[in-house]
Image (cartoon, rainbow, N blue to C red; front, side, top):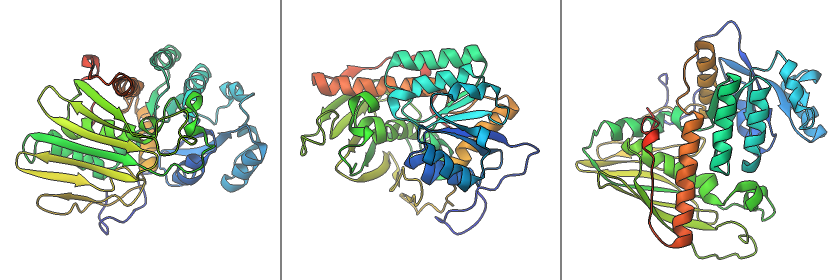
Length: 358
């Protein structure tokens, strides 16, 4: 990022291009309305051109707010008509987890490149189908891992993977929140595929791996004691788990829908480094043994979408492909298996050794 006041958000400025790629957002919930829509007013290589929603009032609101064309407003029923829409180059799927596979596949078959929100899907089979269909259609697939484009988390990658403080002995990763309304889709197993592990705990899994530059060999997990049986009748309230690595390093992780937390800390042979908050959209802060990290914030979502647009224009590979989403779901499901069986579960991730993060 350019120079500026450390820790303050700066506009995501990049050189202008002759044509910005058009993005359509599928699903107009909070993340689209509060993060992705505004971010697309800052992007240099892509722009918002369309929306997809089952709610006509929402479509009209977005049309007025972002000056969208009538022909670029779609419902879920006529979504496949985007095939003939030359304004739309990229579809960003921002729906409940269990709907990701359907709309990624429909987007690919319509000839559109796709960004899919995390987690990629709720089953390994769906992940494979999504990857295969995108390859068959000749379109790119990227997972919405915005933190790979965040300078604070990139600094963690640099410090850890280059062993700036020596070999890492332990990583602590925590991400939790008060989930709120008991009737929301995140608390429905059929829609979410799980609770906080699928939603915010995935950031801990990712953070540990890109902090150490390694893939875990095993996991050992425990469910939290439920404090609200009515709210958490279908999904877990929280979990603790360890990730073991062949190097001997261990990661201690926690996620929750009732305990707020936001930390990524690595303890190494000659010091430590930490982000707290680590996974938020804004306001990230970092420290090391020696000093506070003086890094300028950026709009993570704008950087993420611009990077994908550049990958399309340059015919290069995204750093957060579908295979990374598949890998992470394998880890999440192993964590659930460990918690259910109360046993350590070994992982076989050799095929994903190149998917760590820069």
